[in-house]
Length: 184
Image (cartoon, rainbow, N blue to C red; front, top):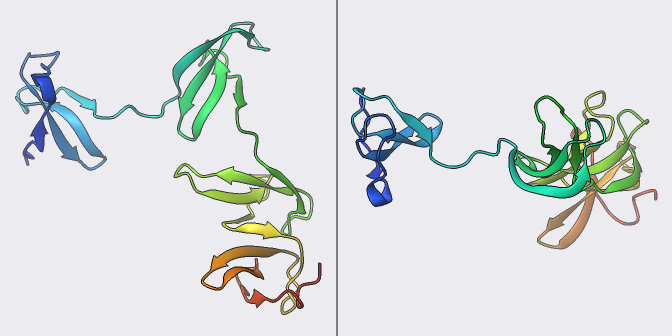
């Protein structure tokens, strides 16, 4: 089935294979650039730049601790990070935004602590720092205390129409906890 072009590319960018005009088409993974002479010419290219770890800037004067090559600022799937310029030969990486560590002990494994993380969609959540050994995670701000109903050792804070409220962090319970009911 030949899908019609959504619209042509501005400035009539030519196909690097056959010289025909490139058009924007829609596929199962989203829009992409393709040759207007498809199926005779099958040239395609991603429409937007992908977060593949491409180099944004070379950090002059900063060397990789593993191989002594220059460190670079990269844009990846989960945001900006620092990595070795010799990737993939050297896989050294450093995070820029260190996760906010809490003093709250993970209620599931009782060994790790909850740290703030960011999903690939930009949402903030809190998870155990022992991941992947412990996969505990909550989507709301964790608060110390225990549920008066089920005695789960963690509460979460949510914004409601009545303001900030605390709830049991257990998915099985999830009941609201008043200030007088939480054992902090």
